[in-house]
Length: 498
Image (cartoon, rainbow, N blue to C red; front, side, top):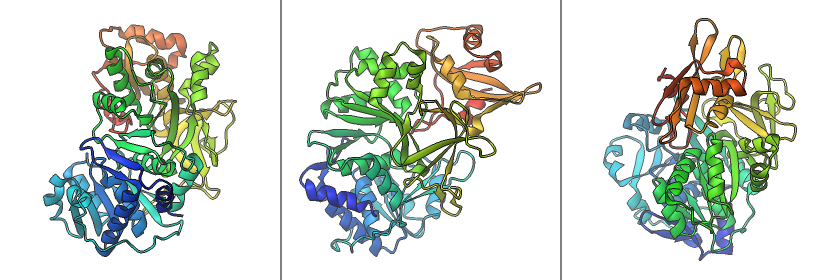
């Protein structure tokens, strides 16, 4: 198994079809050109004597060429977070040298000073100034070859390098995507950065289906909307913070005006229900899909599909309507289980840690090994529960749980209640030290424009809908919550506010 076979299959069916277009400069490549350029990149990277193929850049045509070129060369593809500080970037690069590295043009001079790095600017790479030594040797089909190394955010220490092998990536694509299923008119808008697993799988799934990808290197809601309209985008993936901004701008414009947008997927963080409900009204004919997954699972492991979204949104039954807050059911070939602190499997509606198992699940880190148990189950460190119909609900990270007087409280449950208040645009709930209870509850709230509310109002709002033990003791207000570029809430930064 090798992800290059996905490109080889696509090239054999529609070589002249446009594969990728970069919105920043209008450049594009066909499937045949992508195949040929990947071969040249593979040959040059291998001849450089490097052990890794790195990319330190925003999304560009260099990303898919590098991804497939690295697979052809048998080198791990390592995209580096370009938003990190120079010192952090240098530390990560030191862990993958010798490396063949494609970078933004402005970074070349600084990185040339670091040893064991063969640096090429994006311009050099795309202009084919790499040595023209012909196509590379045939690629390996060993399923255990490392396809991708993705560094974690490192918010609790040194970033770990998650290992995704060829068998994991290919298994995910074969299980989730139908080959050559896209028409020539279909186009996907991709704004996930290269260093996020969603950016990797967006490339692979689009290539396998034969869909044209339009790349948006730097997201703004206005740019996303303009591009979706001008390119007649048919499908897109966004993180919740992106969708919230898109909805705000479209609200100001008065209409979405995108009848061509057939499907919109979201994931990577918690989606506030008011944002989702507004989006579904703005895009009444669009199919919405909520995708839950992790880097260590090669992306998505469960989805709440379009039919479930429409059924829940239209239902007057609170139980069914609440399904909009779920992340759906497992993909074929994936198993999900909820366990308690002793590792015992729990029943329906019982809260615990989410474990996942399947061919696409890696659960491996370089230098650490696999964290799966003897039966192949990977501990996600996410808390959640599965209802009686098999729908999975997320409750936040396991280490974010608030322990108040011996009772485990889920921040996510309290956030779900607070955000239903008409004045609340966004909210984060965290635990704070409390002499009497061990931990107390604090909420950091973003208000909707023009809305006002008192602390007492919000406390009573929670008290009327939950037990009194869930009521925040402290409520502070802010203009915006701290999120990563990929939509992850930075709760540790939230705690600094208290």
